[in-house]
Length: 235
Image (cartoon, rainbow, N blue to C red; front, side, top):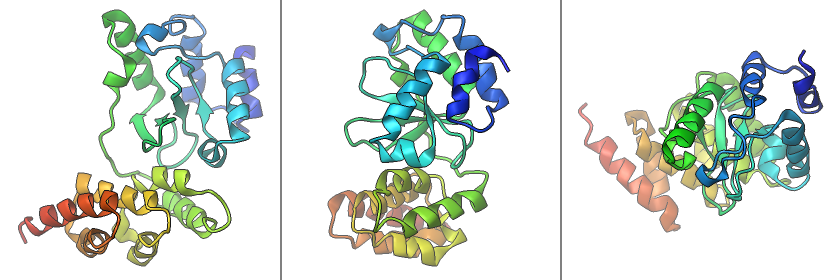
């Protein structure tokens, strides 16, 4: 193992090949010091230090076991996921309460976007890919969702549930997701409502109808739109 990435062993038992390839390019310095376009990828040592600091107070960073990759003076961070919803993907950790969503499917997509931002002067955020998708590993994802939901009365699991729920197939366990829709923190049912709105499916109709009756506008409005989309689908 390259000694440059050795600090990451404090965060991961095994350092995946994609992360090693990512840092082989980051260590050139080409992707650091470009905060004017929101590009400042950290060295493994700095990423490890920042991640350990965040694990002390940020429940999403702690529970997802992600790695913070950058510090571009935006108060937001790009984070590498070692597991579900998609191992190797990059999600955007927002400081202002906005949902944390996957914005790059892999590390190479992040590097391509960073290179484009530097070359063109575009802000990196304008190159994010927030398109909704279904996780390929539904079994592992659903196990994580079940565990997070079961612990949500004792621990602050809302940020993790918000992230995980956006990539699940709700018809895999309708009873589970119906219960999750009753979660006290409206951000949790909102994640499901917005996801059904983005990728409606006939089998989600009952769930969407339940969410549309929620007394919180941020939940009911996207759910009502989802109901309309589903009901307009051909039989």
